[in-house]
Image (cartoon, rainbow, N blue to C red; front, side, top):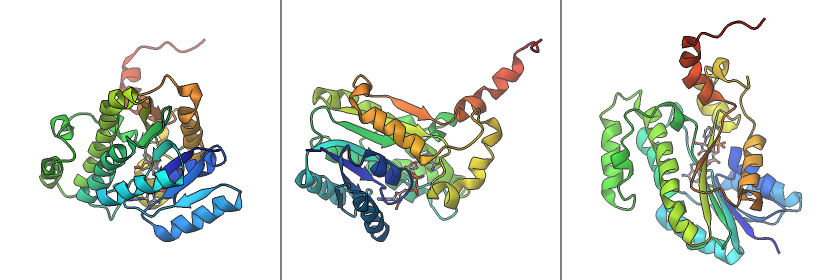
Length: 282
Ligand SMILES: NC(=O)c1ccc[n+]([C@@H]2O[C@H](COP(=O)([O-])OP(=O)(O)OC[C@H]3O[C@@H](n4cnc5c(N)ncnc54)[C@H](O)[C@@H]3O)[C@@H](O)[C@H]2O)c1
């Protein structure tokens, strides 16, 4: 009998593609805030013969996430969780919403599934390559406050509200994804003691609906400095996820895996490379 994979953000993009990729290896519990798309996408997987359960859930609502975890235990033995739900700093998003969904959602999901994941299980939280690009000014002291105490959200939101309105959403996104990586790493030891792995992945620019609808212009401006010379496909992230949840990755936990076509290296090392004297090849 298959174990269960719980996938958030499963109605679109990388979460949806992960559900397709892991379907058949696992039974799938698809969850998303968008109920209509969730049911449509679930039916698409069922039509392929995959056993699929659905549970609409807002990951920024702790009560709903707790109910999701309870429902998961009724559906099967939870073998892995892929937490892909998140929002980008697109034209309509505000800093508070971005931080609450991306950071608090990750804390709620991690906490709710800690006791539920089966021995040998894996939790994967989706961060972003943006967390590699700008580390200055990230308020690590605030990110390491207890996310279940009100001051965590209050103090982090003060930082964004003190910024210029146009900059706050982008910074809130970057800080929220720093939190995803940091919180994931900080949980590795206690997950390890239960025989469960936890890690994060940082996708680069991936051509999902989020990319096309929210961030295309800013992503496209990075193409000239992307060594692979193109953006990524959701399937390339799903292949990484499939590896990381497999027994072949049994010694990998507590880290972030950057999968970005070399974009971070291209962007951060460009100036370093220019400063070197590299003789032309004969
Ligand atoms: N696309 C990229 O280039 C890129 C790059 C780096 C990181 N990411 C991250 O990858 C993850 C997946 O992004 P994607 O590109 O597949 O986006 P997407 O917009 O295609 O899919 C995200 C899904 O999350 C759901 N969602 C949003 N808020 C939610 C909430 N509060 N509760 C439950 N579900 C919610 C949406 O309804 C949607 O179905 C996100 O965390 C995003 O920040 C994306």
